[in-house]
Structure formats: structure tokens, C-alpha cells
Length: 136
Ligand code: TYD
Image 1 (tube, protein in one colour):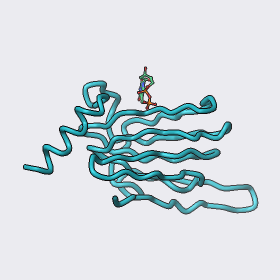
Image 2: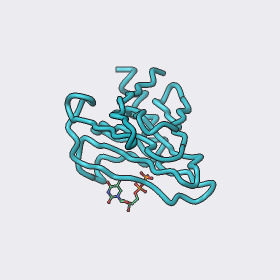
Image 3: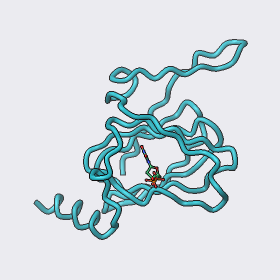
Image 4: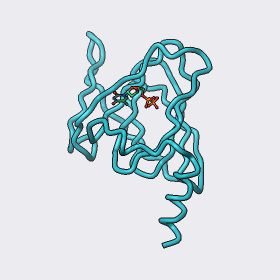
């Protein structure tokens, strides 16, 4: 499976680091929503869904976590442990987030507003959908 990661260049100087992410320039979509996950408890695994029409960039801006990806045919595990590295995830990708370090802050930039109707939360439904698309 092709893993699409974006590396953002920090504007570092003797005061610290600053990363700017411009929609449509540094990432391929307009950001309509930002959310972040923090204070995760040990052993927590979350996500367990795919989207019908959503692009996202996941950045672990503090600490580390892992992302399990599944496109219905292949799976991958991606470690996010750099504040300047973003994982791009688009449609038709089952995702689970796990192995959060205690200090982890997972920042997500999303192309659309929150819409529960865009979620596929049942794994069998997801598998049938992506495999059905491939067979067509
Ligand atoms: P949930 O979908 O369980 O998070 P995960 O991405 O880990 O699967 O979301 C947790 C709660 O937050 C749920 O009640 C829905 C709400 N929520 C929003 O209101 N807006 C959002 O953008 C997101 C991602 C979640």
C-alpha cells in the first residue's frame, strides 16, 4: 500500500520551531475542520471507521502514536512521532489509532465538516464496499 506522508519544513530559530500549513499549497485540500485527540489512556485504540468523502492529514504534534490502515486488500502500520510529519488519508481507508504515548497530541486537518453520514463504522460493510468497487 502506498503511504502518503507530508513533511513540513519548520521555521526554526533560536526561539524554537514554527510550522505553517497552507491549505491548497502544502496540502491538497481546503481545511474545513481541525480536531485533536489528547489525554488518551494507556492501551486505547480508537477510530475503527472509514469515510466516504473525506481527506485528512494526521500529525502527532506531540509524542507519538501509530495508525493502522486497511484499504480492504492490504494493511499497514504507520508510526507518527514527528511534529512536522503528516499522514494523508483519503476515502475508502479503514483506520485505527493506537499506541498513544502519554503526552500524545494527534492533530487532524480535515477537508469537510463533521458529518456522521460520511462514516462507515461497520468493518464488513467497508470490506464489501471497497471490494465491490474493485470488481466493477
Ligand atoms: P469518534 O468518532 O469516536 O472519534 P475517533 O476519531 O477516535 O473514532 O468521536 C468522538 C466524539 O467526538 C463523538 O461523539 C463525535 C465527536 N466528534 C465531533 O463532534 N466532531 C468531530 O470532528 C469528530 C472527529 C468527532
